View 1 (spheres, rainbow, N blue to C red):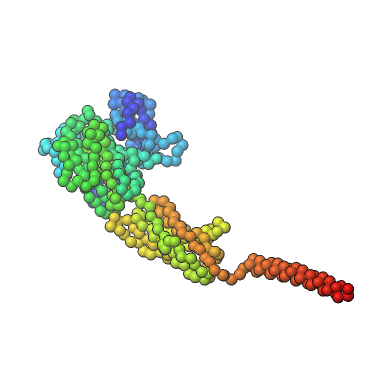
View 2: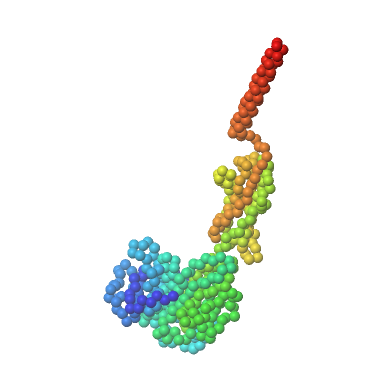
Length: 424
């Protein structure tokens, strides 16, 4: 979670400084100003300031010290000439004690320390390559533009896709400046779930008293050794279920401070296909054959059916999507759906049959199931059939003529011999 580049300066970050306009009410207007962030990992180095000067195209310039070098990640600095840019926003921040029960032990004193009398900022960033989401809390001496990162919370994989039943790790890590007076008073970690207006607490952990909140969700946990030793606050879900799909917010609390990142979890389960009846009964020309295909156990909802017929010669004929039923939701919240197709040889060129295939296209992958269609019996003859029949008839006629000529010739010879004997 920590990118260590001690004593080195990092590329400059372009950022938006966003704050409420003075005199705003409940729906206060926001102001935006272009800002530049010059990042240095060594608080005693003047390298960044000496190499870079303020830009006249930007309203604000900040010289940030980031000992953990999270702001130096390659995800925040695209190659030169790249059209992709990281997202960055910086806001004023007001330190205050949290009121949730698992953070109360962090601020047992009724008095705020003098250390809080400073200019405070939060910075929220997202990498251009989708591989980093970062939230920092920074403190600057009053009336200066030289903040230092005190708390950093990040996620390296904030978009995760999982199938049902698999274990899932939602990445979240944090770093605390050990030189800050707030670092020795403990911390707390909270994971919350949000999806389409629904929200719930997944788990909350008070690192100071080493205990969970009572609202811990079954099957969710943390790696406590990694949490205390390296700041790994990743949420571990033992078995992914449909209800886990949504947004998870990882919040890390220090006394008077907090920072959070959001991680998206998408549950995607492809369908299982079954065709019935299987095998198909032997069919006669002109008979209508009904085939059904059931797609079951898939999530999310969107699914597309297709039917195709592959003839004995390998020619593929599309049969459309068939007649599709509505969705049915099972006890595990996955969906099922059925498509039915009617194969009428009077309307379709089915020939002597072939392989009927049901195709289900889903975000989790495309699935196929096939069954063999056999058509037997006499059907209306084609031109080729007529030609074959004529050829057979001619052959038979020729054979009859040859046999007739042979018998006729033999009879004439016999008659001649009888006449010769009589004369003798």
